[in-house]
Length: 290
Image (cartoon, rainbow, N blue to C red; front, side):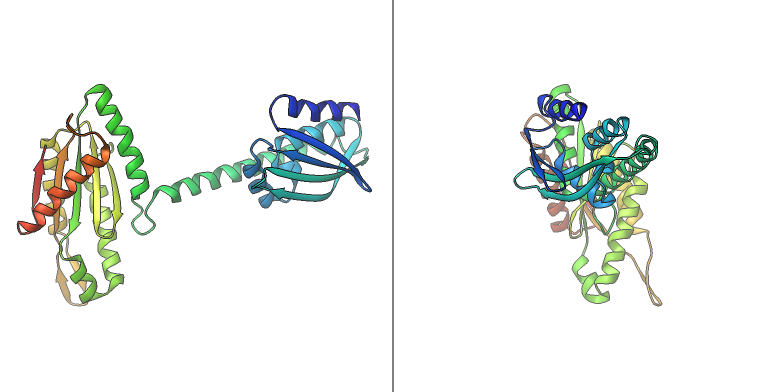
């Protein structure tokens, strides 16, 4: 079909693929695309739907053109070679009086598929930036958002502060009551942090029993005030094992941005050093430096 040939040529001409080779076969033609735009996403969608017309907008165009001429595609082979950027699709084009009328149904299914793919993308993104145990942001996300806040502070001379938080004698909690209970303590601390911070603050778990809070547009005095509230909330929260009720405490280091810092990592490291000072001075306390 002439329209179909022009359409496939247009895909390559307009940068949707590096090249397209069409090889005649016993059952139609084998379309070999090189570096097709969005190939990894195309494969993921195809794995969901097992239908190339639902998973690739380019194929949906082909389907439309064929339907206008009372034709339809029959798929005989579909292969993906992601490392080499190649996908092969063997189609046979046959007559079909119902092809055009079925397009609306295909478009509807395609739209639903992209909704599913979008939901999966959101889920994957959420998983990539959160700690699976506590639901807080993980180290990777903290470093990413911390860099953005640091760069904004450099550019606009806006303050921000960082808290580093460590659970006092957390190893003893694990040793005495088991790692399952230790996990519950981490979850409780995460909830207390989330309930104490402002909407603009960012709290994350860096690993083990260490947590951090980034406070945008906040001077050191404001960070210390929040740290005091947080320390009291943790200290007053009762933990129960059988008939035994006890409390845990935290050591907190605080610092705020200044021109002496060259990287966000430097701010985080300084808060971390202040936290270790708090631990050495007797724990369950706050040590701060600007």
